[in-house]
Image (cartoon, rainbow, N blue to C red; front, top):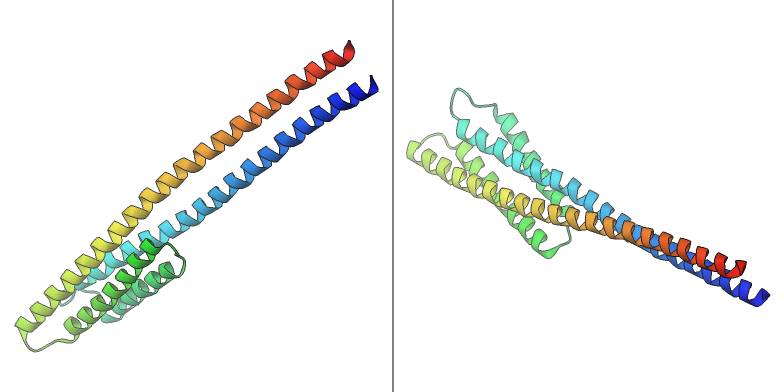
Length: 196
């Protein structure tokens, strides 16, 4: 009889330990997915800031040589902020597609800086000034489009990962409920068995 009691309690203990192990594994996986998701949301903020910086620099370009223009110092600060923000984004990514997109944006920013520099320093030939302004505007528009496309793709990826993380949390919760129910059920069965 003692052997049966010991075997029954050992089986119940093994069931509890299995449930705890599976639950801890699910919690670990879910926590890892959520930490990854939090870092992606931070990166998403950087990408949004990148798009905003491009918009600021573009608006500086369109208003330059007008009564509404900001000072040249402010334009230079905005371009430097754009460049440093793109480099900050580039330093925290490792996915090949994202890295390629960011490197393309960095190249476009260099082209944009050169175009803006030529345009802002040109002063004599009005047709040349207009051509330089058009080139800078086209480069800025292409840069804005590329940054917006990258931000849109990233937002979509974050949405998919968020949805998957919530599904994983739901699966973990269901697994934990199942193990609690099974352990309780087997505990009652063993108690009835031992009571006889």
